[in-house]
Length: 212
Image (tube, rainbow, N blue to C red):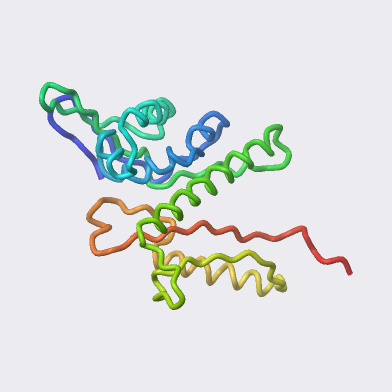
């Protein structure tokens, strides 16, 4: 997916993934509003276009766009003059953003800060999306909603043998691959005829075992 436009241009193809290795970049990315901005930069868009989609005034977004660009999380790919005003068009630097595993290793000096920033950003963005989707009527919280309109929430503990856990992870990975879960569409055309579904999933071995 490369872009080359008239007027002031930059040839740029988003990377498959962007790996974050430092605290400052993580702080910039792990902000609910900035995560929301990046979602709408699958294709080149202006600040004004993104502002309309997330229902914010453009003046509230310029700072965030500049910060994302400064840390190479988004790229300005071309400009266009409209009615004498220069419009800058930006695109996400990658299809997937990932945190380097070493940042969440307990031995690192900033382990707890990295973890708090990561989870706060993810939960904050998820909260905003659920709230907006409820207000828009996209999520049905009635007595008998159709399956694809439900809000599913679960927190609990499951007990498995090592073999059962391995099988669970394997089948979960297969399901993710089958439905391309976690893979950002490569272009707006990939989204045609499809509705958006959001998932924030935590599944991990827990140290909170019942005392025997």
